[in-house]
Amino acid sequence: MIEVRGLRKSFGDVPVLRGIDLVVGDGEVVSLIGRSGCGKTTLLRCINFLEEYDAGEIRLDGRLLWYRDGKGARRPAPESETRRMRQQMGVVFQQYNLFPHMTALDNVALGPRFSQGLSRADAEGLGERLLQRVGLAQKIHAYPGQLSGGQQQRVAIARALAMRPKVLLLDEITSALDPELVGEVEDVIRSLLSEKIMMVVVTHALGFAREISHRIAYVSDGRVAEVGRPGEILDAPSDSTLKDFLRRMR
Amino acid sequence: MTSWPMFVSTVTLLARGALVSLWLAAASTAAGTVLAVLLMAPAFSRIGLGRSAYRVFVWVVRGTPVLVQALLIFYALPALDLQTGPYIAGVIVLTLYLGALIAEVIRGGVLAIPRPQWDSARSLGLPPIALLRRVVAPLVIRYSLPAYVNVCVMAVKASSVLSIISVWELTFAAREIIERTLAVFSVLGLAAGFYFVMCFGIDRLGRRVEARLALRGFAGGRA
Image (tube, rainbow over all chains, first blue to last red):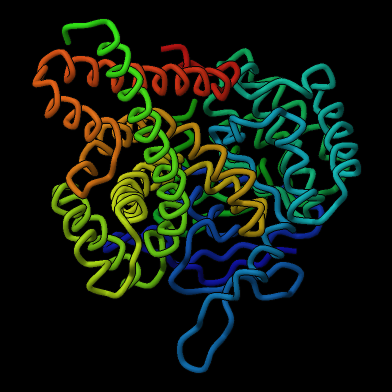
């Protein structure tokens, strides 16, 4: 379970998150929707501590992440602890972010091998299985530059899964893709639903969000303005800005 | 140069000088590269003092002529009771000079790594050594190789400055021959030819390494 309480963050003088509260239960898929600039991607990055935040707390299975409560001022957790905690999460980015100098297999095996200390053979075995799973068994020795956007993103999903994470954080993973490549990436995510892995999904694809999510959270102006089942949020919204947002998305 | 034997002896002498120049450049580039890598610790230090010290070093070395640096170190070493002789002093001069230049090349390479790559590496929780070895170093080498080759070429040419502190290398040899023969233009022309061949060779070698390291499937690397 992930609990986010009272999360606040500013970039300089500009407040981006103004007190986010969000709980993601075990096995739950929660999508974050909202206008661009509303803070949903920043929230996702904060959950993985790719961004520092100014106030509030994030817990994974009850354990406080990223910061330690000090007397008076809080301080960041030590690097080694931060690394361990990050390994319990898999992040997939909008722009895939594969390492361009490594083959698909090396990209996937990197984390297990060097962060989690698997032997090279075990890490590569795991990598091969995962690449097979995302439909890229033929491409394990291809470099990212030799793959289509959809294929790169599937490698990126395999790379995130290779850490055997408790939670997957997906940041607009189909936004950079050509329309005809969106389906193959969405299919991979669909195939993960049966595994009951927690997911936090930032997306603009409302149809996809409706299909995969247990709940949808509408983020507006740095707060979770409304949260509920997909039907409640997408078909019977009560927040006026959400109504407006949905009208524009049609 | 009026006779054939004289021409042969001139070319032989210059070739020996060229070898010394090449050796000086190679030794200083190697040592300078090591120095530059070590300098990355203060350059990217979290402590402000480290970064300041790095900047001052680069400013001083880049902001003063190698010729002056050479004289300074040549006279300073004996004053510090270090009896090194011109060759060691020369290598020290070039090492400091090239170290500062290469450090800036490497720093540029590190800064060229796109932020999303760092995000990826961080989200995988890679420990520092693995991060450096598997992600940062391979990318930095690719980004900074053209500029690095440029410094290597400069190293060969910069070594000519060491003739001023009585290091016997290509330029020194040329001046020696000129003093004896007074054939200023032909000897200097030959010496320039030797420099050109060395620099051209390094350039070609660099291109070959670049082509080998070119990221497969990516544009570039075919320039």
